Amino acid sequence: MSTRIEAASSHGFGTQSGMVLLLCLIFLLALTLLGLTASLDTILQNKLASNLQDSERAKQSALLALSWGEHWLLELDGPTPEICSAPCDGIYVHAAGDLPSKPEFESYSWWLEHGYEAGINPLNGDRIATLSSDSINRPVWIIEAVQSIPPAENGTPDTQVWYRLLARGSGRTKTAVSVIESTVVRFWPALENTGLSDNPVPEPCPDTEPPAACGRFSWRELR
Image (cartoon, rainbow, N blue to C red; front, side):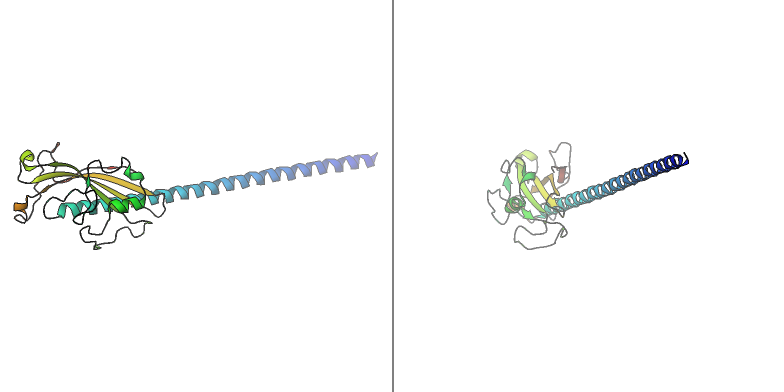
């Protein structure tokens, strides 16, 4: 009789030990899953932060190219640059409607073919500055003459021209690309007035609604 009791007691103890082991394994599995989830979340957050930083780098690169192109255009002396379907007189000024409807999705080689690398003088090809050297591609800008208003219509002795400038910047990866567009207004002196004034760009520009100074009239992000 005593032998049966001892055997039964021994069997119950073994069952309890097995349940404790199973519970421990389940607990360890839960801790492992929590650790993996936390690690994956950290990795995802790091990737998101890295992508955001790269996108911001591309935007800053595009803004640098845009500012460079605008400054170069506004400081350019002489008569109105000729509108050409191919580079002429050292500068490629596209006619209105000459560019594709979605230039922001064109390849980098297309931008180089139809525009200029920021930091290089289009007239002679001399490098004046190096911008965004930490990006995978250097920033590029393109110029398009949207509208030209002759002196008789704008009320001044000079020609008023509205330009559309496009600037492309990139980050450290091929997927990080930013394209910014701006509208720039400036006056070009007549041939007989060239060189007579130290500041051929009057301010404010007439015939702009709302009234705006010569320079950047508007801008927006395309990509």
